[in-house]
Length: 367
Length: 255
Ligand SMILES: Nc1ncnc2c1ncn2[C@@H]1O[C@H](COP(=O)(O)OP(=O)(O)OP(=O)(O)O)[C@@H](O)[C@H]1O
Ligand SMILES: [Mg+2]
Image 1 (tube, rainbow over the protein chains, first blue to last red):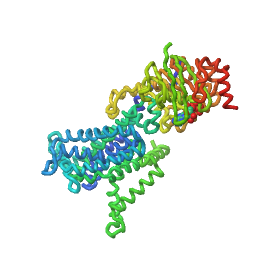
Image 2: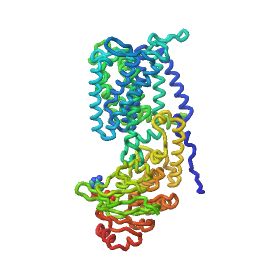
Image 3: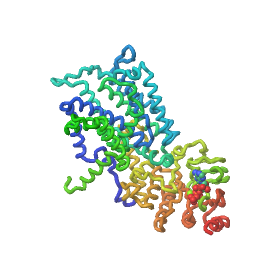
Image 4: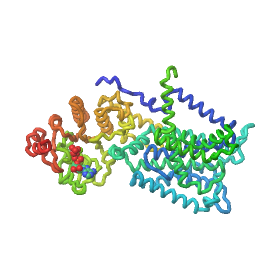
C-alpha cells in the first residue's frame, strides 16, 4: 500500500452549507432580526421587503436556468404569472366574471409551483434543440403567447384592464384575511404574508445552495460551459435542461402565487415582456450564477423606489419640484446600474460583496 | 480476447472533405491501441465517431458488441467510454476537484428533488463520488491542485486534470487525444507512466492518439497509422516503424 499523506477524508464538513459556526451564528441572527421587521417597519416598507423576498425567489429560479445552466429564458415572468393565476383560481374568490374556489393555501401554494414547473417541462425540449439566441427567440414568443392567454382567458384573469383578486389567505382552515390574533398581538394580513415569504425565501434559498453543491448544480454548470464535454462525460443534456426549466419555473410559480396577495389584485397586462426582462436585469445586477446574488439584486431593485423617495424627502428635493420625479430617477439609476455591472462587475453585487469580504479578511486582527 | 470496439467500413464526410475512408479495425480488450498519423489524417475523427460526437456517413461502429448508430454521446459514455480532448475541454471556471467530480457524474445516483433538499441519499452519493475523485487525485498525484481553479493552472497540469476527469468515470475504455502534446520531455515521461498505469494497474483499454512515434513505440500494444482519412497500416509498433507507407507519410509531412 502506497503511503498516502495527502489522502483527504473529511468530505462531509467541506460540503456543508456553513463552513464554520460564526457563519451559522450570523445566519441565525439575521433570521431573528428579520422576524421583528413587521413590528417597526412602516406598511410601505413592509410591502417593499415582502416583495423583495418573493422577487428573490423568482430570481433564484431564473438564476437556476440562466445563471447555472446557461439557458436563455426571456419568459420567466410568464411562469410567475402561471403561479399567480393557479393560486387565484384555487384560492381566490369567485365573482360573476371569474372562477375561484377559495381553497386552502396548503393546496394552492405547492400547486402553483408544480403547475408552472409542468409548463417549464413542456417547453424544455425546445432548449434541447436550440441554443443561444434561437432559444431566446422561442422564449420571447412564449411571452407573447402568455400575454395573449392572460388577457383573453377572462374567466381566469378577469381580462385586460380589469384583472381579478389574487388568492385569499386561508391556511390550515384558519381564515387569515382579517389577520391573526396571538395573545395580545394582532398580526395583520400583510404581516402574515411577510412571514410566509420570509420562510419560503429561507427554504428556497437553501435549496439553491443545495443544488450548487450537488451533482445537479455541477451538471448545470457543465452544460453551461461546455455542452459537448458535458455530454461526453455522460450528462444527459435533454434531461438536465428539463430539470433546469422545471426547477426555475417551480420557483417562479411559488413566487407568483404570493406576489399579488399583498396588493390583493392582479391585472393580466402585468406579465408583459418588460416584466420578464426585469428579472434578467435583477439577476445580472445581483450576480448571475451566484447563490446570494439574486437575493441582493431583488432587494436592491425592489427597495430602490423607497430609498430614492427617502433621499428626496431627506434632502427636501421632493417639495421643491425637482425636474425629475421619483419614478424617472428610479429608472435612470436602475439603467445605469445594469450598464455598470455588465461592464465593470460581471459578478454583480455579489462580486462587490465578495471583494469587500476578502478585503476585510486580509485586514489584520479581523478575527 | 473479445473486441471492445469494431469499426466496420466507416466513412465520414464533411461536405467535400473525406475525413475517414472505409476504415475497418477491431480493438481488443485490454490493449493499448495507438492511432498515429500526420495532421489532418483523421485521428481525432475516429475518436469523435467512437464517442458519438460524429456519426459515420457510412458503415457502422460497435462498442462492446452493440451498434452505436442510434446512441447519444452520453449513452456511449455511460456504457463505459471516457475521453480527453486534443484542446483541453475542462470547465475553466471550476476547481480541479469539481471537474473531477463531474467526471464521476455517472456514479452519482439521485434526482433534482433530492438535490434541492440535499437528502441523506444525496449526501451519501456525494460522499461516494468524492471518494472516487480522491482516489483519482491520489493516483495522478494532483493533491495540491485540488482546490485550484483550472484557469490558474499550467498547461501540463490541466492536461493531467482532464485525464483525471476521464478516469473518474471509471471507464472500461479511455480515449486519449494527444495527451503529451505541448509537453516537455519530463512531463511526457510522467504522462507515459500514467498511461501505462491506467492500462496495467487499472486494466482499462486505452486508445491513444499521438503524433510522436517514440512514445507510441514504447508503450503501445498495437498501432494503426492513418493518412488522409485512410488506414495505412495496422499491426505491432515495431513493424510500423519499418513500414514503408508509414515512413513515407511521416516524411511527406516533414519534408
Ligand atoms: N467538424 C468538422 N468540420 C469540417 N471538417 C472537419 C471537421 N472535423 C474534422 N474535419 C476535417 O477532417 C479531416 C481530419 O481531421 P481530424 O481532426 O480527424 O485530423 P487529426 O488526424 O486529428 O489531425 P491533427 O493531428 O491535426 O489533430 C481534416 O481535414 C479536418 O479538416
Ligand atoms: Mg486531432
